[in-house]
Image (tube, rainbow, N blue to C red; front, side):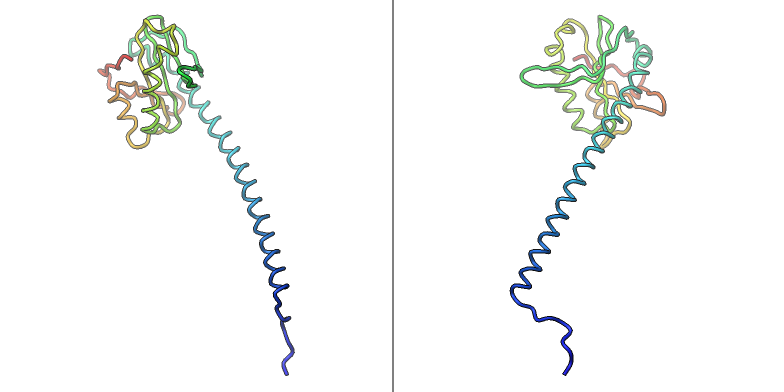
Length: 182
């Protein structure tokens, strides 16, 4: 007779193996969850720092860009938080001269939904920032990359379109572009 190579499987042995396997699955699941948390933190850190870099790049050239479009900027403000009608918001850059203000939304990647959200902020801007209620308000979007022709949509909605380029930025609207007043 051949020697038995395997022990006889009993219900108790199968149940034990099932419990051990389930324990290993739970440990693996926990390891994946911890890894996901770490990756999310890294992504937030990266995108947050990247966004700050793009904002700095845009703000550095914004005064010159707007001056070339006959908007003589005297002051800029960044990361201006507001609360209006039980909603919190933030304006990335405000460029003002006492008669006109350009409100700038900065995105690493500009998407069509970003345009919609920004237009809503522009509609309430004078209420959220009453110090600008009696002056002309223009909008601008600035970005490194645009998806789904969001840059074209922004221009059609009357916004300045500013593209980060290398170590500076440019307004890509045509020289004859007339921004919409909000």
